[in-house]
Image (tube, rainbow, N blue to C red; front, top):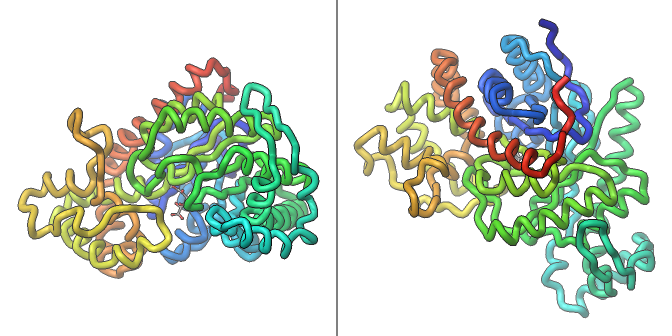
Length: 436
Ligand SMILES: O=C(O)[C@@H](O)[C@H](O)[C@H](O)C(=O)CO
């Protein structure tokens, strides 16, 4: 059976990112996608520059691990490779050289988040400072926007000024980096696709802001495969969605209508691990034009293998992770504190300890609110554990000694993720491109 050993662009097909911080998870990822992925394509090589730095890995190691896992699994479908959260041309060069095909541009360093809170006097001063450079203000003020099958709104002066101050420089940076990536890929004889991610802001991306971002990209000739807005609610690492799913669904429908009208392009869900209550509405509202990005949850399932085969080392990893959590959580959206989960010495039973630190949303007894601070403490400290000579070695050796267990727990875990996504595609009545 021939296999697709090289990643390729996936276009508008529904896709799912299986970030793998150990480089040992691909076979479990493939098993889950093959079992319950339906029309969803897999992105089996996915790491952000931040993850590479925290795990001291190189892009070509990520690509090699995914390719090896796919070869062992005899995988014969198209797949993608996501160079995630790129901020500079140097980031892009590294990932292009390693053969990545999907480039996620992260212009968040140029997003002025304070604009959401600035009083008019301050906002006007900031706007006056950029109005010459970002001379597209007149193009939007007073415009009445009617999106087919979507929202209608008027772009008043304050809305446009705030959007320009908040996102204007970020859009310019994203367009510049997109042009660089396309030119570098052309020189290398490669085909690539782009995502723009503005998901890591404190405030949600409003529908008018999304419209202005997408329309500027269109006017500048920047074609994207996907866009990652900051959705409403709380999308914390390693746990389910926190918020009003009904309100989320309404905003997803609006965002999807803009993507259809100004693209088409996919909506991308970052921190997509374990967002079980989001998946069906997300897939349905986008009518299958979505990308879901996960990474931390595969690392947590690796710790589950240690919990089951070497509980003593699992205890040591928890204690070590707790000692690093307050520092490592700095760039991640999490709410757990060390007081929310007990130190290992307070939990005698090993099974209880696995449940306390690795409990999943669908294992929570009916009526008990899902909150998993232990998951967040372990999720954010992946880099410290993997780079610790002793514990990183124990973790890798345990997985290599019990590959079937890792494949089993990953398959079970990602089937839970994929089932609601496929159900959402089907309930939207789309006939997403069938597998070749
Ligand atoms: O930790 C990271 O930097 C990545 O996993 C990043 O958060 C990624 O974009 C993501 O959201 C995966 O869940």
